[in-house]
Length: 161
Image (cartoon, rainbow, N blue to C red; front, top):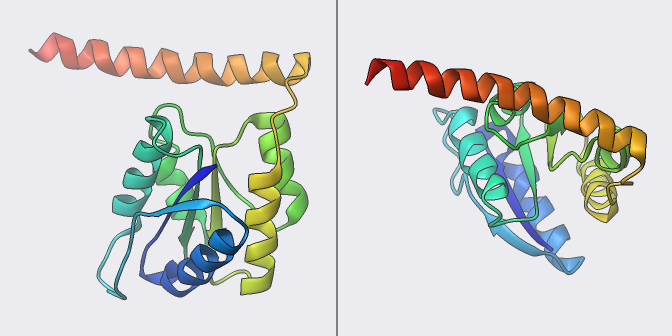
């Protein structure tokens, strides 16, 4: 599986460790930055690049790292087709995929250590969506919410042209 990974300055070091870990685990890793430690960079830029890569099928899943995980998760979830979740435990990392078809794992580098981050990444990437009826039903409802609002935004933009 091709995995996109990105981080802002707060997640820079943890991302570097995760890239090496994932490559050792046999994953094809597409590193979307940051490539240097720049305290003035902004997590939305990296969240957008990663979300675009996953939503457009360039990567099967994505891992995003910032200080707490919260800001990057909020930004990634603005992109249609993205289901990003913050996880600080292995249960949430795999259950988010199995039940909710989460396609982006968001980690907080200031919240968890490198060994736990590796475990979370592996749990996330090894998980599969269950396809159970109740999970499909819920996923369709989430997609309907997204469709409603993306259609409304598109219509508003069209009205201005």
